[in-house]
Image 1 (tube, rainbow, N blue to C red):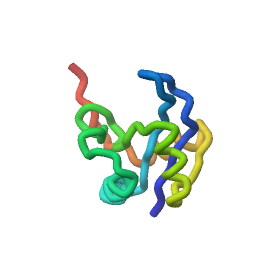
Image 2: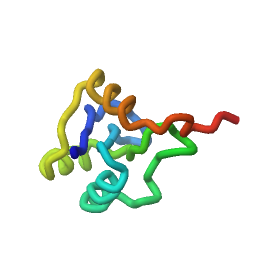
Image 3: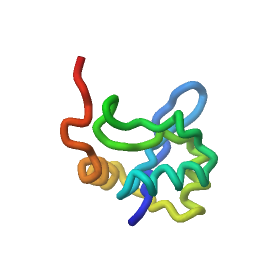
Image 4: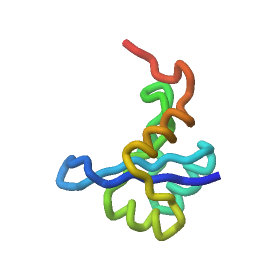
Length: 92
């Protein structure tokens, strides 16, 4: 199993952000906790179809040092599609 991060390119509230995903949701939560990311930052069903955390560029650097695999946009989209929960996102 592995944990993945894409490039921190999304600007919001003065930071650059990226996505942290994993092959397994439990592994994702363990890794996020190791980074010091609050569980309340988790994004997953029913709000979004793929379990993930949005993390800052600073957290991304630490994630890579801890073993997260750096991914291109195309690679992270492939991971997103692989881990998404069918019918996980509820539309209003």
